[in-house]
Every structure is written in C-alpha cells, then in structure tokens.
Length: 223
Image (cartoon, rainbow, N blue to C red):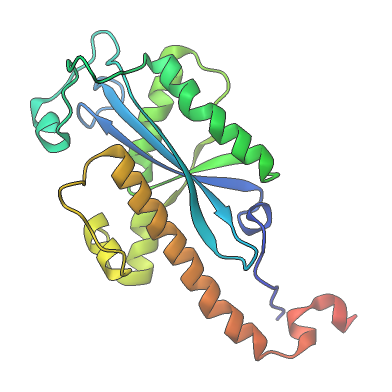
C-alpha cells in the first residue's frame, strides 16, 4: 500500500474543484416558493505550507422574487427587514452575478476547473442558489450542480457535533450568538470550520507519512 504526500495546491487537494463556502438567508425552507434574501460567499486559499485559510468574503442582500413567500418566523430568526430603505438589495440575477464573478476569477487563479459549494447543511444553500439560477435563466454558474462539501458530516466525523455553534466551539473557534444568522457571519464561521477540519486532517496525515519508508510514500522511488 502506498501513501501519497498531501497536496500543496488547491487544484490538487480537491481534485480540480475550488471550494467556496456559501450561506444564504431565506424566507423559509422551500427553495421554489420562499424568497432568497441574502447570499454570502467566502473564497479560500492554500498557503505555501499547505494549510487552508479564509481569503475573501462577498455578500449581498437580494430582492425577493415576485410572488415569493416570506415566513415571518424566518425574519424573526435572521433579523432581516426586506422593506428597509437602506438594505441596498440586488435583483436575483444581479445578485448571482455579484457573487459568481469573483468566484470564477478566484477559481481560474487557482487553476481549478469548477467551484464546489461548501456549507453547513450544504444542500439547503445549493438548492436556493440553483432555484435562483433557474428563475433567472443564468447560464454561467461556477458551482457543480449537485456535489457539495457539507460541514455537518465533516464536523460529525471530526468532533462528534453537527450543530454549527457546537461544532465551531468544539474546534476552538468560538461562537457569537448575536452575530449568528447573518449570511456573512455564518459563511465566515463555516469557512473557518472547514479549514480547521482540513488542516487537522493534514496535521494527522503528515507525521504518519514521515514514519513510512520512502518507497511506500513515493511509488516512483520503488520502481
């Protein structure tokens, strides 16, 4: 059995996928009927030492699409006022372009073929993004249409926790209850959580490899 050195670039680490952490705030749980109200996306980068870190955050408020449903209970949780005059919200198509354009630039810079959405309960976020894509007829989504990296599963494996607040505290990252349920805060915390898990795996993997004979680490050396 051979062991390969941990990747030192994003394109190698995730098989050509560029991970982008996304959080959406919405008017409910139904991606087809409920309004998309806020999107935040966090790009990542890999340092020279192979550790994954947060890079840039992009976010926007979104104008509810015509006929969409907004559950008052959702607004109580998020604190969003869709009618606030200073909200500076963008229509769905403009909001998608605002988020997608810097993602595509970062993806290209990392030599990756496609972005992959990272989220806490990632299917929820991707479903709302995909629903907005269909409504607007958007043709240039950077994201894989169904594959994701879900920090719920990763946190369950790494820490035995699945709730975002408990997972971040288990990772030693802390949690600010007052800031929670903002798309930016949740996306950035989820990004830090994802990076923490990926880096912990590397920290476990590298020392184990250093104890192996070279011909097991590098198949070419055994040829």
